[in-house]
Length: 329
Image 1 (cartoon, rainbow, N blue to C red):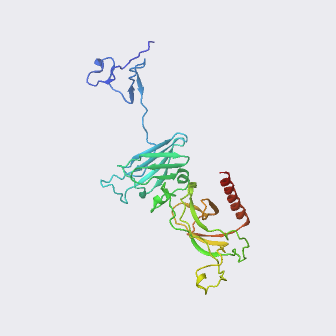
Image 2: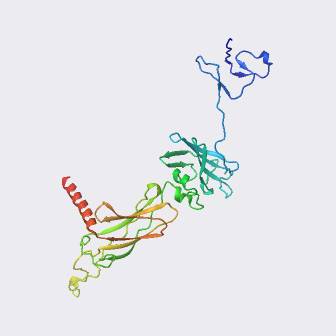
């Protein structure tokens, strides 16, 4: 039986003429096809066009996709949708916004974030979006640059659905501590009241700072440093203070501080998971992390810094190494 082949070189649908009068290279009616216009042997050949199907459904009425990203490695697609089309670009409480993940292998969609405070708008499409490991970064030139951890959002439903301060948790620019740690006490004893015998700080002027650790392993900038922790702790002068020539003089300038107790406040709803206490000596640019604590729901944490043998060796070794490098240079 002969094989009939027809090419549609004209690439034109003609519904004006009777079926029997349609010219070669034209066609009467077609659905979901594309006529090849290449210069090769397949010029004029009819190709099927893949159709569309709904893969993600949402309860938001009149929602519009303002941005998307396909993760080819994990076969997932991320959609940013909103029904906020206000003429004045406001964001009333009735408007809804969502970030949705579609798993192509499982054919399943998951709402990662659903919150009015996302403040999306159809006139401000997502202009930049990227996925780094599990962190989804995005910006729309309307809100500050943001990011979410897609694993956290998927496994802990509602993690990012906070009513107020959504940018405290999602902003790429993390909260910067603006208050120095509070010095509660300076002493020469440890927590039990026993006198510390080390003289490590007697010739040093030290200060303390701290930094927050956030979920996803991010850190804040350093907080302001405390005043210098120096005190003679009641040591009296034996010089003759009655003589005008000795007026204003002190007999010795030795730091008697051997332990410092500090308090650091922890703001809530910023995703803070830990805090590190930072130590610095005046005249040196070297910073030391002397202690770190895990944060759960505490409003503040206390640190008790005292001179320990391992701390002395660590710091002295660092200073000796620095002196050796200076000598070599």
